[in-house]
Length: 468
Image (cartoon, rainbow, N blue to C red):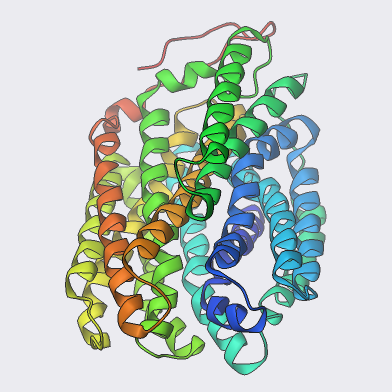
């Protein structure tokens, strides 16, 4: 139980700081004279580094000790939070957010590794469901916490809040968590470098695209470099004896489809959050706290539903919850796009927000449970790192795509102009999870999930069986 609590608290901090900035964006825009591009970077600097280093964080934990690297990650996160609180310019805040993302990239994948190591497979769905609920609490409380702090104190305190919590979790983790490592005797340094450059380039492109254009030389070059280095990474992983990501796992439908589901879900989720928090303030005229409280009907659903979905997945399998979750998320956001207009009443928005939130909550624990169940226990960190990296890459693409859609159809000139752009962005946000349904349909059934996962061969560990 201490492992579940401490790992969930680390996940809570990492999730909170994805969204806690959201309700502060209008205040930051005024206080720091920030542009739309600056606001995107205040979210994306965190998500960009988070995504690029997630697999590195998992690999370092497996090689150097999961408890040790979990504590190191928390320390980096806390130090960066102090720097963010002290930032005097948009540029300084963006740099601090990037360092925060590096700390979170160590913390988040290791939370699932620690839980997987502590719980047998028959109880893992329930444990991951609780983890998903606490992660959902971080997501759901972010807008409210951010709004309350911005209204009642100042935006700096959304970062100061991390410091005491992070320090307490660090100290308790040193005392209560047991140390564990993966089975690989060597760290795949070449793989870490190749995948880091590849992911950075692929996520840099959509981040820069709204400012310099999707057809610009910078964006096209970034995409090309990213594709090249991911290709080199795949080639290296095929021949190195100790790969950081065994490519055989992608032959597992459970592993591949769960990663596809979370990618498209977060392509919709993070961009929606970026736009909805601003719409409630700029389009509807609410203050930061008022906006955060009204968004709670959407963002609180993971806290309520995720533990239930995780427990039921142990009985019925992950597939039905991933499918229904994406469907509800798409329907809810599509309904929101349909009814939104200048001066729309809050009551009109409640039901579509709840429906979308329930959908999000169903995917949180079941995608995590599916990827971890698809690999041997020793490689839970690899699976979690891959899953979390893809979801954060999806989040980076999401903010860029929805911001570009907003800029094409709306502006910050007036509430009416903002609403026009917001409506168009929500149409795109509704389509993305529906695309992800293709992956959910192809996910394995409960009986197939129960089959023994692939054991990847190494010089010390022969191949046991093939994946389904």
